[in-house]
Image (cartoon, rainbow, N blue to C red; front, side, top):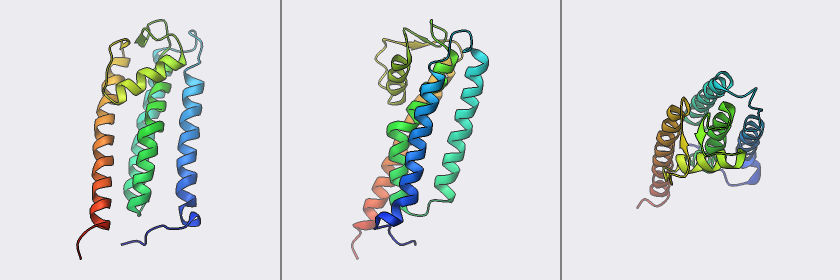
Length: 167
């Protein structure tokens, strides 16, 4: 069992990793959700979706094999759950374009981000809906939301149980 990280120096690499994930996901969303209608479309959207899958697999591998501290895993999962994954899905939606090419009712980047969070949390207000290839992407995002929430809760309970077990 690894020692618990307690100092800022011990958390430095984890905080840098979290900051890098936040910045990368924001830049992906910012860039891809602002593509012109001539540039956006099925090809660039599919490439962005494949990139999203590669990112998610690499992050899962990283959490499972490289991060040894349960506290660090929980922190990184929380950052992913709250900001990174919805922003990356929003980037993929934006890469497909607007004018009802991907999400019916979305008029710009903020609408795509809103739709992503609503889909990720499986709230589904119904004011916007996916179409075309984005329907599969929306299903993948909803399933990812369920899985990530389940893993996050399981990790939090395991960490709590480990720290509060009767000796």
